[in-house]
Image (cartoon, rainbow, N blue to C red; front, side, top):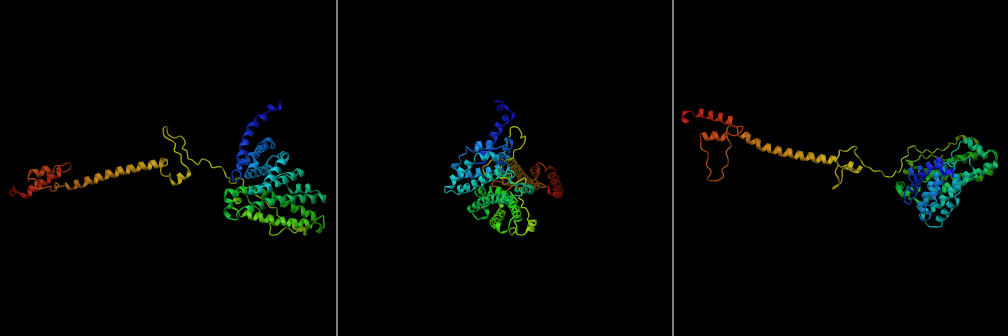
Length: 423
């Protein structure tokens, strides 16, 4: 009764609700890769509650038998949770081994492309859980120092021999999943840019991480075995390692050529040939393959609202919302116009008004120029129109605005030129 009111339990209900939302968004029937941000929240949830109790409480209710894509994405999320979640996740998953096995067996009996991948993936997850429970010195992320590896192997040759065999089995499950995925994908280069291709390829990021560690550990263990046992005794180990080496090298090379992996992970390159275990000095030539995950790896985020909202719009004015396409190429016909379009239309109207004013001025200017010195003659409009009489009437006709001074001066000069004879 007292534990029910502990502070941690007062926080957990909100966290569980948030975790449930992330689980529902990460594990769905959409043929697209799991969103990294949702998987990260699930992983953080396991560290918050120090286990995977909440994860399994919601995951167990998912209708996995109804959708192979749903089951595939469940396996992917579980793989990520095992690798990066709290260490107690491993023991929590052990309780649900039967559920994992059942879903794999179910889809293994059906002729479904994703179902076949689910069957292979569940075998890998069960192998992973068993190995790390048996060897707790190896975390589910498989990253340990060479000193820890030496301590785990010990000095007993039988233990080293058996540990190497178990790592071979582990590697076989990893490589079988990668081969199954590539077998279903088209060889076209653009397949890794399609959501259906990425949905299958996304879990291989964790496979690449696992394989890089397993490869390094088996190399170290095989050199250690060859220093203790005759070469003939270890012929089977060498043959099995050589087969895995070529498969792993082909897997890394093929994944490195895909654009999808290039932006998410840096895949190491293996040497042209496997190490020569018969020569002890060859151990110094071995280079540990290192996988690099960019800190800020680009995510396939959910599309956000690509809008531009002005801060503090004037009162009474509607907020204009435009997406990036409209901002770049302009709004389509009939769509809402933004402030720039309205300003352009206003400027166009002002230009038209100025143009009409300019036309009026042009019509008035010729009349002003013709009025200097003499009034313009009006065209004849019929026989009844006669010429205006000479004399003062001419001066009266010339007295228009802006022409009176020039008209009178012209008349006076004309009268002086005519003289008395002209009167």
